[in-house]
Length: 579
Image 1 (cartoon, rainbow, N blue to C red):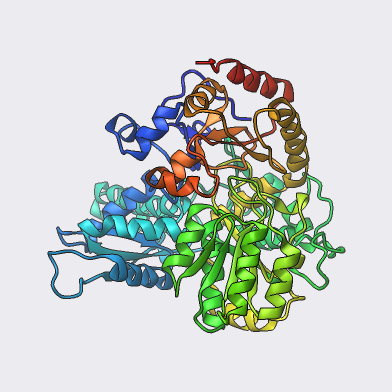
Image 2: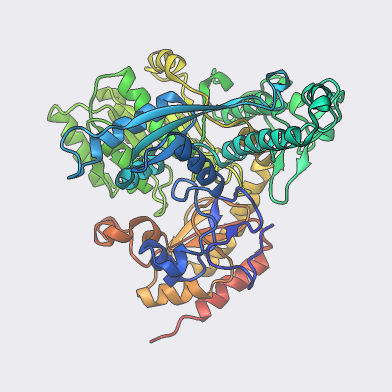
């Protein structure tokens, strides 16, 4: 369990000492403002950040290598896991980048770099080659390219970067060793150190596990525990993905934490928890981030049906709206998510406007509003549009929403994982909906499995305790809500937002709250942030029109002892002065 300490510095990873942590320590209100304003005081100390907003240091190292190899002096680059995602980035930059330096269309170049093990003979299931897809663009176009990285969530994983760097380092070490050996002995060196059958000093990626050459032991004897996450040999990646899909489909029933991977994926399918007849793991698709699942859901719909605007219903997480606005014909935004908004949508449809799909969160982030799914479903069936529901905040232990959706998406980075050390996303197709066959045909052609194998392994291990963690977090949230209910409105599950009578009171409460403070949610430890400051700092007035106040504090409740949490929140409330 992560416990914040007085020694934690601004910009340190949350959890501490976690190489692939997905949150960062911003402990005071002013720290968050200075971060948004890119003040040197904060930016210079950032060793970590949320991966779609902050490029991990391992990825930066790999970008530098690719720039040295491919870029002109005037160019920068970003790295992607496939040609398709790199090409999509190139199209986006061409659309949104403009510069007085270029009269003709700017040249955005693509390159590929394949990193291989020490010797092709050693390319096994434990360390295989990896291909990086490099997008090269003018340096002053970097903010545009970075916005694509942020909105879509399809950039390479930090573990992928670490793996590629490990292969590069291993090759460099081997070459340095080789040059130090007298010429007469080099032949025997090559045989000994490049033949996997006799080598006992095989160099592998930093996140792999060393194991005896002939060991075929079961998973429990192979995995190594990291401080805040679990890692397994790459051999288990495909099995881990099957287990993840079954768990998300809700067909595993009650799991025991001691179950090994083979038992999980071979277990007979039970009646599913989703309440949807016929659903299997084949209806579940994995993605590198939650936002990537939303991006690909929208792209799937655009390919399967005519190009039409979508509807964004309710005030969403910011990048969902950006995806609908920037990657297609645009969208209609009904940010209040109210009954009156549904009336307005119905009038829009009656007028003859055709829409592609309606996207909503259940409940919404950060206001915890729940849409009238029954009424929206009736409109969808009558006017032939699809419904995409993001269940991240509610999660399927707490809410059953797939029945009302054509497509359900979720961020696996949040409470499904809980350990705040890995990214992932999922998309589920509802086999009982009218357009299922059409969607299935298109996605089976278009889908790319971009979830890096080591990330899949970590996600699978983390998510085995998903159910019991949710139940504990529900209990803790209710206790804190009871403490705060006279001053705020709570949400369902583990997330709620608090507003105060003044921004000064918000800041006093936040600064005095002795819990982890940084971006992200759905962690096993309680995590708070000044949500509107972080997500909408340059558009505070716009956000306030939809009830998202500038002083809003979002809290994601964790697994700590409830008495410790209640004391922390009471002390924070007591710190608010009447002035």
